[in-house]
Structures are given as C-alpha cells and as structure tokens.
Length: 194
Length: 442
Image 1 (cartoon, each protein chain N blue to C red):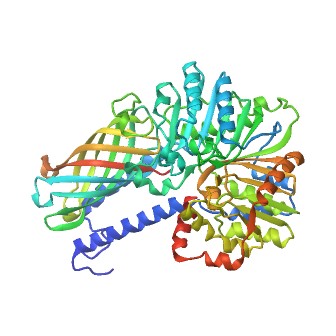
Image 2 (cartoon, each protein chain N blue to C red):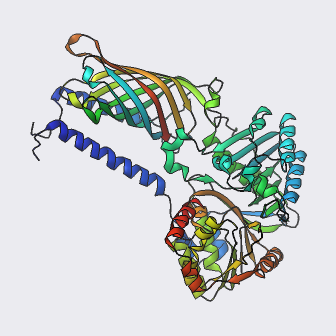
Image 3 (tube, rainbow over the protein chains, first blue to last red):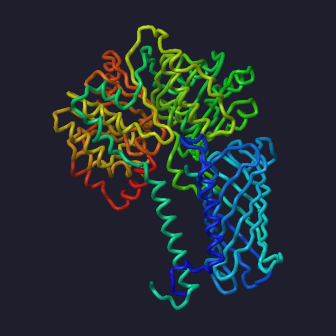
C-alpha cells in the first residue's frame, strides 16, 4: 500500500467517513454560546479485554479518551466518545485499538447509594454506548461493532467517574454476528475541561 | 510518500506520535493557557490618558458604596463576630473559604451554621478542596465538616484532591482562595481569614495562630455583586443549583442608600476570569507618591516586577514588607525571590528574625498614595494573579487609608532591610526548587 489511503481499505474508509459525518452532525446540535456545563474533556481508563476470535489479542491496558457531551439532560443524555487503547498482550505492549462511540446516559439522579465515593454530591447514571472499534493489528478488516454498559457512572459537573463497565465487540462481517472480544473498563476518569 | 516496509509498525508509530503530541498540547494549553500577568503592564492598566477610576470603569470593576469598614485583626474576635452574624441571619448566608475545618476553638461557628440551617435559613459553604490537606497548625486540631450536610447546609468542595481526579491535574492548579461572608444581602465581609484553627485561634499566645484581617461592610450593592458571582460559580460546580432569582439583583439595590458611604470598587476573579493583574496594574501605574504593600508571599513574575520597577522609576516610594516565616522551607522559598525584587528598587523589608514562634503575617494589603486601600483575599503574587479565585475591594477613603497606614507603620517598625549580598546568598539550588513550588503553589 503506497497511496494516501489512510492505511484503510476503501470499505473501512467509507465507514470512517460516515462516523465523521455523524460526529459533525452531532456537533452542529450543540447549543451556541456559553454552556452552563462543561462539555468537552479527556479521560484515562484501565481496561482488560479477552479476545474470542483472536485469543492472541487478549490484553490488559490503558486508554486515553476524549468525550463531548454538550447537553445536560436528566434523561437519555447523549455524548460522543473516542478512545485509543494501548495494552500488553502475549506479544508485548503496543497500541491495540481505537474506538468511536455514542453514549446515552439513561437517567441522572442525585439520590443513590454511591455518594460515599465522591467528595461532593454527585449524580449517578447508567450509560449505554454503541460504536465502532478499529483494531490496529487488523486494519484490513471491517471495524467491529462496540457495545458497552456502564452501571456506575458518577458525575460531577467537571468529572465523570465510571466503574466496572463491561463491553462486547461484535464481528458483523459476512452477514453474521459473532463475538469478537469482550472486556471490562475497570475505571475511566474523565476530566471535563471546558 | 515515504515508503514503509511494515505498514503496521508505521501506523502504530504515527498514531502514537499523534496521541503524544495531542496530549502534551492539551496539558500545556489547559495548565498554562490562561496564565499570564501581562495585563499588569499592558492595556488599560497602563493607559496614562485614563484616570484610575476611568481604568476601573474600562476594565469593568463596578463601583459600590460601602459603609466604613470594621476591621477584625484578631482571630477569636472575628470568630465571635462570624458566629453572631450567622446567628442573626434570617434569609441566607454565603460563606466562601480557602481552608475550612472544625476544631474546638471554632466549633461555635459551625454550631451556629447548623442551628440556622435547622431553622430553615439557606446556608451555602464553598471551600477549597485543599482544606483536608491543610498543612498549617490546623492539621493538629481539625475535624471534618461532614455534620454540616446532615443539617441541610449546602457544602461544596472546590476542585477536590483525590486519586480519581488526578487525570485532571492541570485543572488542579486552580484553587478557590476567596474568603467571603454575605448575610441576608446586607452585610459583606472579605479578607484573608479562613474558617479553621490557625485563622481563628489566638495569634498572641502559644496557640500558633496567624496574624490576619477581615473587613466588614454594610452594602446591599456589594452583597448583590458577591451573591451574583457566587451563584454563577456555584451553579457551574454543583448539581444542587441555586435558582437564578434567589438573590436580589444588582439593579434592584442600585439606589439603596448606605449610611456615610465610602467609595469602593469590587473585583472578583473566579472561574476563568483573570482580573487581579489589571486591577493591581492599574493601581501601581496610577500611583504618584507611595505604595505600601503586604504581599504575604511575594512570588512575582516578570510583568509584576516590571510594574514595580516602573513605579520606582517614576519616583514612587514602594515599600513592601515580607513576613518572617517560622517554617524554614517556606522561608527559603520566598527568600529566593528577594534578589529580583530588590533589583526593581522597591524598599523591601522583612520582619525581624526571632527564635520564638512568630505568628505568620498572613495579611494582604496595598495602600496607594495614602488614599486607595486594597483589601481582600489576594496576595501580591503570581498565583493570586492567575491561578486562584480571588476577591478584593478597593476603597477610596483617606481616613481608612490612614488607619491602614498606621497599621502598616507598626509592622514596619519591626522590620529590617535586606542587602543585595544577603539576598544573593539565599539563592541556592535547594531554595530554587522550594521557590518553584511556592511560585505555582503559593
């Protein structure tokens, strides 16, 4: 491969462009002017993943993420997330995958049993994510469908604290659906900068 | 196009580089992006075609009438007055403090807060997240404030320090340093005292307290501004939001008379605002005769030094008194700065050394031309200009300036000059690292 193909086959490139289009569309929904809540931030996570179709990709690693949540809805608050993960596999430490996902916080409540976990009164929500995951070792393949559930997401207005979030990646190529891998985000701490 | 024999390795390296560069840029931008004191030596602050009051107007510092300030310079005296103020509250109390913790010596304040909250008075207490890490004498006496929430007090820690927030390290540089009391929209108190042991303990005994001041005024106008700015900050931080119409608006109290008013200007530096540099820059630039300054920790950057030097070059007598800090490491840190300040021509003095415990001089004060007096939470240092929320009041009143000058002169009598040779001897490598910590840490 020698051309400026962004190291992706054309079918993946098209999907990538669709994701970019969706992101731009989402950004255009953001309220103009000063928002009372911080909406953009970055995070750090600890992740463990077990490869099903490719057991050699089983890894433990860390992730760096970006998040954008321009709204402050008490129900079904949407957000955009991107994350790049580096991890340790049997073949050593390397960049493993990158994901882009749309998240939905199903609800937000200040009355919850996890208040002892934060200094200030925090909000609890359960979050569902759906997106795509590109594996750096398998860039010639179609991206995997990424599904995650975060049962404990505590929110300050400037921080998200996510704990014990299981996820699945599904291989939807060849007309069928099979589990490609599953994993856990042990924690993800996101600092909302602006 | 560069040919790459191993497409995977090439991709990974490129991605890793992009991630590293983006992350570095993000951290630098967030950490230092808003950090500058340039407004002290540029813009309206140094526009000589404007009078000082025109500069304040241009810079957006509102003028507020306040009553002649009552000064509290004794910890227990202020503790008793704060207890009384809280006890007298009928509608609401706003409290903001850098360090707040309960101890035997100040539990009467927190008892009053709980009592009034039980009675239905709205009480908000905003404290800095470093309160739990108070490394002053308070650490031997402090108790948590958990009981306040049980009584319905709205308590919020600004920027708490905990492991799971370390990812926000650049943001952790920003601290809530204001000390504010607002009661029922009528009485306002600002200054340098915290609500902890060291501020409210007895500074004159072996209690190892510190010397500090609080300034109480009656002013619905000032209270309205303080409440408005507090609401903005609070709602940006807390899910327990305050309704936007909870406090009387600035316009509604604009014409309320204040008995024997003193002309004053209010400056709040909270959130992303960076107002202290331009405020202090305006005052220094407009000085014609004298500037008396209690900076607390005078960690100055080049703009601050330039502003001072320009004033000295214009013939202004600038006198600065540094505290003698009984803590050797803190003393070394601030001593490192002395040589640079001496180079500006400022008459820099330090309190006389003593082997006895000397209560730390925590006061912040600036008197310009015997007319303008700056009081509040702001130190004259880089951190207060950039990295902390601060609140100050500039009072234009000869009588008050004279009262504060008398106080300054009493301190001056217990100081000595510092020679350039001595200052140079303090600039060791070990002191440099303490200085860096002090410069950004305050």
